[in-house]
Image (cartoon, rainbow, N blue to C red; front, top):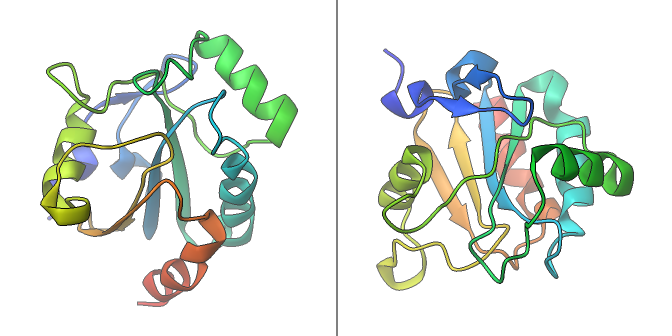
Length: 162
């Protein structure tokens, strides 16, 4: 039976309703992103992971968020254009969400509860917090914004081989 996490409705950048479960992934990397952040160059590393492992079952899912320093001010069309032009992003991007507070997207509420941060903190501290999730929906690990995407390579590989 699929984990309810995989059935949470999300809206893609182009307005389609999707769940993470619809991707049929063997591993998922969910990231809250922003276009004007010091960590924005991580888009390049996320795209590299996507290109390397997509055919083996990895889905990278980017969720733009404007909650940290107003670093994602654009609308969905602007976000998509920025990501494609500047970083060649081809992995799935979703509509802008909030990750903390009363309006936090249910996906991030679940992820924060299942994989707390440093010292048990549930709040997401900044853009480019990453959640690595097994294909069955079990959360494997939460990674700080400072963790570069390529540092997750071995863990992704192990998850795909499991």
